[in-house]
Image 1 (cartoon, helix red, strand yellow):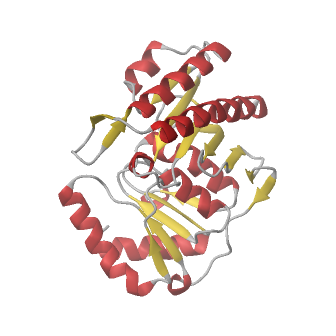
Image 2: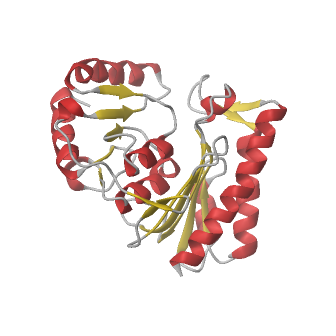
Image 3: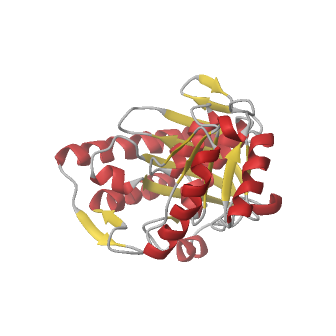
Length: 270
């Protein structure tokens, strides 16, 4: 069943990606703001989610839906008798999208259980970058893929040799604290990247473009698909002290490196 679910996720992601890419060429309209004036929602975010939700409902009417641009908890309660929930980010990296930076993604995951990373069992996930056409996929227990090529996380390296990615929240005080941590970590690693799309950062860990990634404050839809893909590629994906990755903390990397990075981040007060 997982392969059928992945096929559906991929088909829906490509349909949404085509819409999003076309809207970007036509010009982006900001529809609203979320947590702060710089945390935007575009009309394309809403259109993409509506399309994804409609296609999933047509294909699997008994599944629940949890998306960024709708009332996810209410949606999950209103729909679903199958025990499966679709976790959807219709455009991850909306600010990149707004500025026409070709690093944004459609992220679709199907999980067994409620939309709770501490209890769900992720079955299949797809992350598509509409600007480049790259599509990352995974099904539980069957590995991770970039297109038709199997991918694997990079081997562990010393922290000093690690290329590490992170992200920042939209609240000014949160960003100030995150910046202070990065300022202390930067001299201790190869370099740090902040590319603005969590799902793709996790996929870049999965195929070795990054050694590690960490961030606090991610929503479920930000990390669900990327976390599955990275884990299936051999990375350790975790929160603090071995709990599941969540809004509290998400870390991905080769197991030994992830452990070393987690310890150092705790020392730095992340």
